[in-house]
Length: 141
Image (cartoon, rainbow, N blue to C red; front, side, top):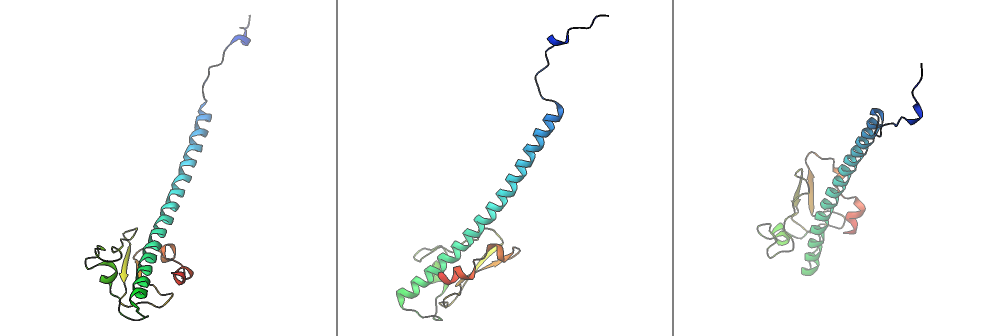
């Protein structure tokens, strides 16, 4: 009995089932990391938008108080800062929309003291610590 020449047999090019499984697992793990990163990026973006809304309103109130010589505790109604319809027409700013529907804003009625927010945010179902500014930030506004 004569054996065939095994040196001239060409192997077929391609991937084995095991190699294909490993590639799919690697791709799935990279995609899951992407989703986690995107969620964190969105949360950070929402936090920044919320802080900017609070900061802009605070600066508008401070600017108005300085321009008209108002002291802490004197009247400063929402219509002065946001306009009568909240559209900013003839005023400093339009009334801000929260970056998420769970964040709603309430305007103050008097010029606040340093370190106290004039526009406050209500975080209905959200964790306040994730979206609110730190006390040091507020003091610098």
